[in-house]
Image 1 (cartoon, rainbow, N blue to C red):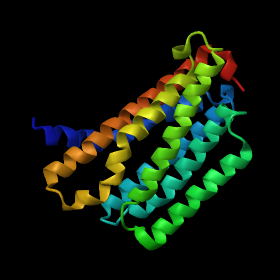
Image 2 (image 1 turned 135 degrees about the vertical axis):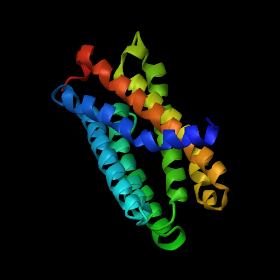
Image 3 (image 1 turned 120 degrees about the horizontal axis):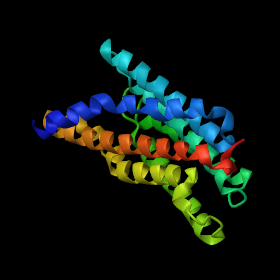
Image 4 (image 1 turned 180 degrees about the vertical axis):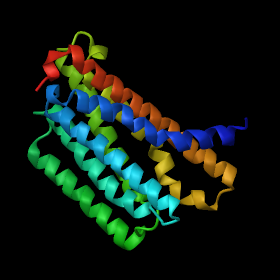
Length: 221
């Protein structure tokens, strides 16, 4: 099987992996603390977005406007997750300013630079930078406080690793995503296939993090 064919298969099934963290989050929902509940709702939004995007694609309708909306919701929910995890390092005022700045940038980008029927690569790239910053800040907090003996046994470690890996790995993919339309089909498949692999790893790491909640009473609401 050629690489492009294999990656095409990965692209097709990647959205289905959201069902794993979605199922875990709702089975464990009553035991989750507030940050993890925000993450659970993000999984719901991700699943609904993937379904709507697929249905629009099947009807040959441009589904990129859905991505513009999803980018803002994803950033909002992950920012709230990090806010609770980073307290008191990240003040509410700073968080609100960052969210408002991102929303303003995203809206201006959608209306004046990359319209809703075009991939919002500028907003996705900025989102990646901000979330990478949050995840690095959280790892710094782990090191500074040194209160967790076995970090790998905590949901925080796996979820933070998921965010850092996915948005770091996808940053340049987001930046150059609008150039994919001019690529040969095989190269475009490789491009989006790599992104799909990062996305699958992201969802699997989040799932591991949620699974760790079962034996970690610190994260029970």
